[in-house]
Image (cartoon, rainbow, N blue to C red; front, side, top):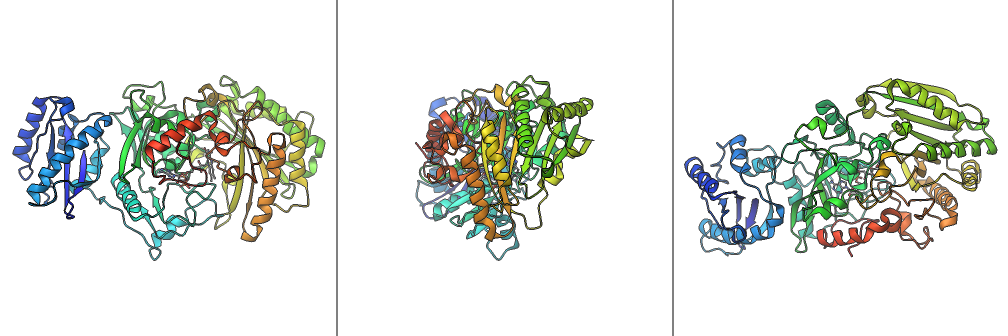
Length: 640
Ligand SMILES: Cc1cc2nc3c(=O)[nH]c(=O)nc-3n(C[C@H](O)[C@H](O)[C@H](O)COP(=O)(O)OP(=O)(O)OC[C@H]3O[C@@H](n4cnc5c(N)ncnc54)[C@H](O)[C@@H]3O)c2cc1C
């Protein structure tokens, strides 16, 4: 345990506490410390709950630099013998308090004996050594990050890192954190100062969860990008600031593995995985959150103290609920995610290449287009119906087409085109797969034009997937997306609504479209309550979206997309109420309209659409881990 404490008079004290499995180990450690760490004082203390396992505290000399000769390897060797469950923290803390009182008295005679503990964490694995190095002053990462004001060029780097230009924040200051300790310090300070804080990783939020004028501090964890194998946890550790593309690269280059992460390489892992996270490979491998083994979170307790917690999937872990919440509740709810550990649920052992799915050998992409002028209402209806039938028939986990992901982009007639794209891992079988897919879609209608097929390595694809899909103008776009998960294909009446909204001329929404992405496959083999991603029986993820450049176009675009969505789901009150046909919506594509009774008149609350039966559990987890509601936004979990 690594501690920074402060006496009532404001003097700062720093120390390390740890445990040994046996008294003998403790004795040997104390002897070696006495010999080598001459500047340090050692305080053996007995833990009443495990009386034979004394722990040590080292104090003086740390600040004076007396420990610098101790190398990381030796420090690690000493501390490897330490380590106990985080569940013991309260007991440990009780003891630490009394020992600190002694320390403070010796260091600063006559000062108060009940020091405040600013922050601490239990050292559980090798990653903590970076923090210890920082603590000892032998790391290049200071304990606190810079407070960056509007006159610093880094301020705009953080504030402008937002995919959706519709929203903008105006914080008092921002921080770029490069270690968990820096996150703890930054969160603690914002809470003490009473400033509303949000965290950002990749800036790909579709709503205003971070880019909100009410926000006073933005904490950006994107400098935290380390990705390595953690032998103690038997899992791949990914720091929260790594992007999806950086994670794909590290997994592929280091071990030939993959996670079924999302479709844009600049998405941040910190905000992405907590929302479930689907992508091109989800039909084959499920959601990325299905591989989450543990998560490190900086949470704030009732007293306003920030501290880090590691929550794992292990059934015996008392913090397991916090892990569960990070498999589908979405970012910005419980604390700052600083590190994620991944391992397939059925994997074990210490060979990193076997802990996650193998990366695809190659990727084949295809694209084909119809011109709106080649389609009348009847053939449009037929195309979308054919597509829905294909999805109903090919979304089982064992379908040979689970290796195929497709996106049907039904653009506004104003734009002129309808596009189908595919991504296949079937290798030599991919062209045939595309032919069959297109044959199914075009049954009874005209064939598409401009067919393109390309084959490439997995990594080449993953780092720049479907380039023209994500290409945007300089300065970016403002957008609105309204998502839904479908258990069944659209009815003909619904396809009629789609046709009307894409072709009607009383609206001017050039960037409007309906996207239909294939879903299902291995996503649907996981029980709805095994993770916080409740939607486990859908075949399609659809989104009504629109984008605009000029802020003056916002109102007409919002009017079009909201009316379109409302009429599409008219039979269930204007939203995709979970039931026979729909499975609600996906929190990684948040839509704040769902919490507005004027825009969601169904009477079904937003949280039922996103979390279904899991919401009360999330509310309890929120009450435990964020009792002060520090981490909040337009669709955040309300403590219950
Ligand atoms: C172009 C594009 C493509 C997308 N494709 C997919 C896709 O294929 N699959 C999919 O599942 N989703 C997809 N998304 C949605 C994306 O996964 C979510 O928006 C995700 O929350 C973005 O995370 P971020 O860190 O990039 O965003 P940010 O805007 O930084 O954060 C989003 C939310 O997460 C919180 N957050 C961020 N970092 C942390 C952290 N370290 N700890 C705790 N909370 C944090 C924020 O406070 C905020 O509430 C896409 C989004 C875009 C814009």
